[in-house]
Each structure stands twice: as C-alpha cells, then as structure tokens.
Length: 321
Length: 287
Image (cartoon, rainbow over all chains, first blue to last red; front, side, top):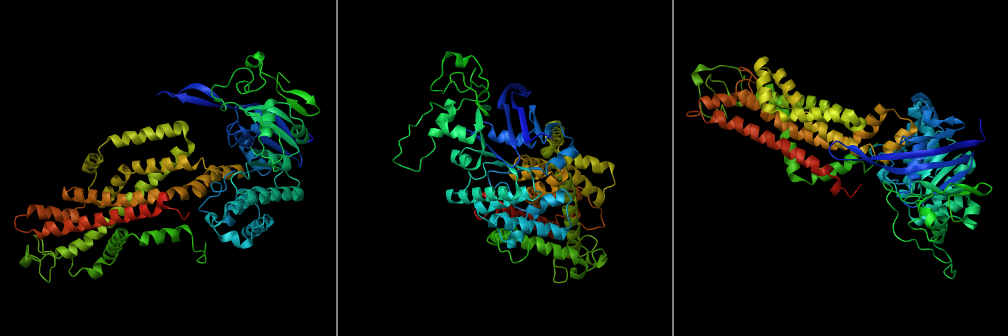
C-alpha cells in the first residue's frame, strides 16, 4: 500500500462536441487535460481556478460520476477507474462528495432522516432503528438537532442544508471527501461556520479533503497543498505556503493579486488579465494561458510548457519563469 | 412526515388548490361521479334493464326524470349505471397508458443513448397512426367489449406520457441530488424509483387526469358507433345511439347522456388544470 491516499495521474476528460443532423463529432471540449496530483491521508488538497477550468469535472471524474477519457485514479494503490461495479460500490463508502448548491443537492421529496440514512440502506448497514439513530448522531455532529430527522429540505436555510449534505457524505466514515465549492453558494457569515465544521470533522475523523474552490482565502485557510488550474490544465501545484508566499506562474500571481485584502491601506499591485477565458473547444496553441499572459514571449504560442519542479514538491508549467 | 409538519408538499398543494374555484368545481363533479358509480344500485330509481312495453319513449316525468327509451327502460337509471362504465374505462385505460408511458419514458430518459433513440422513434411511429382509426380497426377484429376497449385505449394513449416522463428524467438525472445518490452507490433502480420518479410525478398526474376525459370521450364515441360497450349493458355512448335513431320524437335520449358526457369531461379537465396550476413551480415561491 502506498503512502498516498489518492493519486491522480494524467486524468483527461474530453467531451465530444456534436453538430448536424447526424450528430457527428466536430470537436472536443478538453474539460480536463492531463491533470495529476496526490492527496495524503488526513490532508487537504485544494484545486483553484476560474469557472469552467475543469475543477468540478476533475472532482466528478474521481468519483466516476463522469467517466474520464484517460488517466488513472489510484485510491490506496487501487485504480478506481478499473474497478468492477461491485468493487466500485465498496469504494464509494471510502470516497464521498459535498456539492456546491445545497438547494439542488437534497432530494426535495425525502425527509432529512431518509437523506442522511440513505447510505446505510444502499450498503445494507444496520437495522432500521440503528440507521435512524446513526442519522441522528451525524446530524448532531454537523450541528443540527435530531428533531430535523422528519423534516423536509425546504424547511432549512442554505447553511443548514449544506450541513445536511456534509452529514450525508460522512455517515459512512469515508477516507476522502471531495468538497466541490462547499461554501461558495452560502452567505459570507455562514461560510466561516461551514469551513470550521469541515475542519473540525477532519480533526475528529482524520479524513482527507479535495477542496475545489475559486476562493483563494478559503483554500489558504484549509489546504496543505494547492493546484492551480487553467483551461483544464494544471498551471502550478505545490505546498500552499510556497504558492501563497512565492507564486511562480503568472496566472497564480494574477489570481492571488485579485484576492480582496481586509486592510484598505495595503497597496498591493493588482495584476489585471486581459479578456476572457478562451473556449475550451478550441484552446490556444502552446501554453493555453499565453493569450492573456502579461509576460508571454513568442515561444509561448508554440511550445506546450511542462510541469517542472522549482522547489521540493512545487511544480510550475511556464516557459518564461 | 407527520401532521406536525405544516409545510410539506401536499399541504402547500392543497392550500393552492383550494384557492382555485374552478378546480374545486371539477373535483366536486369527479367526486359526485364516483359516488354515483359506486352506489349505482342504491341511487338508481329503477332497474336499468327492466323493459316496460307500456311506457315506450315516454318524455321526462317525475317517475322517469330523463324519460324512457324505445324499450320502456328508465334512462336516468341507465345513465347512472353508465357512469360505472365511463369511470372504469377512464381509469383502467389511462392506468394502462400511464404505466406503459412511465416505464418507457423512464428507461429512455435515464439510460439515454441508443436506448433513448430507439424508444423515442417508436413513440414517433406510434404518433403517426391516427389513434381513433387504429382503435376502430383493432376493435373490428376483436370482440367489442369493455375490456378490449380499455386495453386498446390504453395501448394507444401512452406516448404523450412517455414523452413527458422522458423530459422530466432528462432534467432530473443531472441534478445534484441524483449525483449524490450515485456517489453513495445507489443502484439504477433505487435512483429511478427513490429519487427521480417521485419528482417527476406531477406532470404525469396532470396528464392522467386530462387523459381520463379523453378516454371517456373515446369510449362514448365507440359505443355510439356500436363497436363499444354492447347493449343491453348501458353506456352513455350507446344510449346516445338510441337517441340518434329516435331523434325526431325523443330528444331526451340524446340530450341527457350528451350532457352527462359534457359535464364529466369538463369535470376531469377542470380538475386536471387545477392540479397543474397548483403544482406549477413558476408560481411556487414557497418552496
């Protein structure tokens, strides 16, 4: 058994673009293009990037909610992508997911008790009474009263619903939880509560997180390692402390400079990127970032940069720096 | 789940339904028809098949509120028993259609791909056939009885349900709560029946209610043409046939069963539209 809990290698997801009456494939959306990273036991890995950069697709590929095109996802040394359906069911106890939109992630026709105890039904764990008790236990663990068991999702606020979603994800004691923008749909005041809840739960159970977010301060607060994604590719990956104190890739630099500072007197220089994120159907040649890069040189449009190690564990894909 | 919960779906639905006066009218009509059909032997003043040759084609009187037919039978009593036929045909035929439509629509919408393509082309094919003539042709080969009619109406009426259900499934299967169920490891069956179907039932319910009205009309038309429910079993359609034969001297044989069909179909339509409006998510600010 390897030391890593999860090892993602060369993960790719290409969505075919179909057009015409015969639905012939006219192109590919490179939603995730050659992404690799590892997560260690009990640690938090962050994935950050703009909307549409492939963070969510990466998360869903790991759970096989979307079948990846290529690559491997090794969970404790076992390739999830090659698991049989029966083995996959077992693996699903170990890897769970918390969704972004707490309004869409709970079945409106099911009671909270039914939602949180569903994993027990699916995996045939415990008797009916025990399942209800366990659901109540986890609901209390996430800060909701046991009286919520018989109520329906629409009776709860966004923050409460997100707690319910978290409870559902952790009832089976997973080793890894993929948190797909777990707080970005919530009020700022609620965000902190949910983040603290996630961190407390990690302290109690020792599970690892893959935190997908566009909020750099959330990532910095929670993660030991960070991967910065741009147009389906990894731009920079490494320990959070290194990346936040010493970003190398110009895209990381621009992202970090865009983080709002709580101190109005601080005069950090803002790097403004020109234009929008290019289409993933027809990504720029060479380095995908060269169309918006402030420091691009001629080679950038021709040569695809490889991730190279700059300091221990810190990899950057940039030709210039 | 219990009554201590004031804002369940059903509560909100009932509240909104009650504010809709036309829907209430429809519901009352349908409820009355149910009572009439179930208690027909108690309510009917005469035996519906009792022939009285002294009273042929008697106009409406106190004793025979809707007159008598060409065999002296009480039209009012025959219509009361005819309500049983209409109700049974409506429910069973639409029950068959809804079940077939649910299965085909669910499979097509959930699994997608070539399964979806194949099933939906089959639906298109079925829709190109003029249903009423297909029913006429099929009934011409089979014995024209109420069971065959129900089955044939059911087998030719499921396509719109299948399309509705497929559309709901296509939308719902991408929702996060379905993804969450997949992530937990729930089987396809559990996802379809526990997660998607309960959320897809509203439009099906509406379409079924409206469909019952159509099925009742179809049965009446078939009976009117003489290939539906066969005399002496009374049905609104075959009373109308008698009315057609005697239209010059017995208006009551046409008017009363005609009114019964009109009111019944209207009742189901009002009820169906009321349910649809009460379930409409666009008006649904409370959820």
